[in-house]
Image (tube, rainbow over all chains, first blue to last red; front, side, top):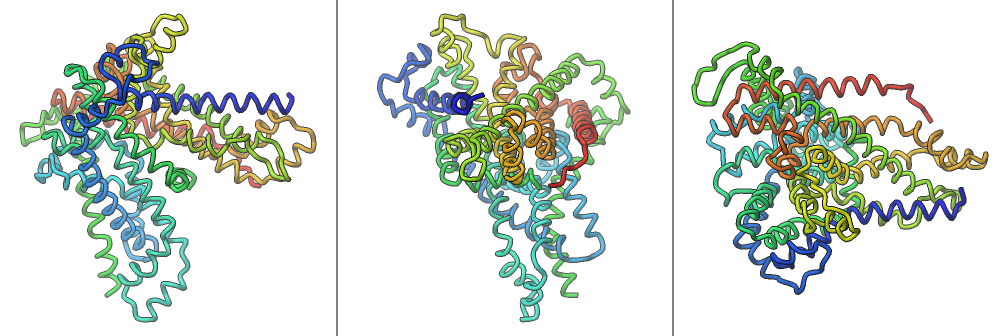
Length: 276
Length: 301
């Protein structure tokens, strides 16, 4: 096959897939400015005018502002907690010998082999029994608990790879174990911490099942994935499709922007786990 | 002593949290699966394997299993093939330039775009495609078909099509991840291997099958296991995208959807847990089998 032809075909194949990715997103963005009538008309028509009131309705009446804020709160504390507790546990498991070390490590890591659906029923009642159902605290604690296995698994191998000399030097200089960890070892683990933070932010931001089960009550507590799914159902009988598309757009846009800015970190953060 | 205090102090909180919210529910699940518990009584009434007997006699369960079988074969196969093709075009197919193999022009752009769906929430993607797939010309797919003079298609309402429409969305979202994964694998293959083969006159197709694929096999295997495990999930997409959450008439249902419905829709907690146990063993069997079947001599380079 000629080199020119091969190049041309390659370009065409790649361009088609790129179009398949982008088109639904652009279409959603355009639909967010349409009127109900336009939405039910020809799908390939452009909106007649930029109807920002669709966005205002989605933000206020459909609660998208509230859902996004809740998600930010839950994910912030969820990821902060995950990273803090995982790095502490991983550090100790990687660098200290004590009876039970292997057992605890194995228990954490085996968590990766179990599907969440198996735990779903008892988890609901455990959270309910602690009085944490329909609370953000409950959801945050569960997010942390279920993020531990992978994060600990990954960080343990990271801490194992760090040189001994630095920690020893810090200890000889009189630093306590805790200080050595926070001021010397943790900063050295920064690349791993960054990857896993990105991994967990995305995982927790996109979580749908756990909020659905653990925040079944008051809508003012809901996170964005729950909210969007709900707006999609409601749009059916309230016939406010433009608000649905506006809600979708304002959910997707910040994520796309963040992705474009951090894409290198995000790609390596998400895939590094698989290569290990 | 100071050392022991430090170790215990650092482990206490993670272990407690993990024990309460992860280990204890998993252990309880196996227990509840043997009861007819409906969430009201404080005491568990053990009914032996009744739930499992009911499960094996239940047509919906087998429908879900059949759907998983289709998902398990089609979704990883299409995703891996597309990802391999794209990764090859993006990394090696540009030919040799200045002594190194390069991808086709615009590789950087494609890489960014392809990966994008990966960062979107599955639930959000589901809602988005519900609009894309609308059964009349107001959905973007049917809108295009109508423009081309064809009849609109009931992507989600046609029993024979619905599952495939959902698989398409899964592939749409997953491919980019595996493009990046395989690209990393390809980048690790020493350039001179390609150079030598190209000098010997090997075609691009030959390069792919004789060099890239064998050297990439480990990565492909990892990808296959990931995708297989994803094929046992499917909850968010089925719940949001399909009509009647698993419909039409069970055509798209998966075990996860049945677990959720039985537990939080009908309060059949015992039965739902039995389904969970079945899902667990299926996932485990799949992972073990894949590792056995795809195991090969590792090629060292």
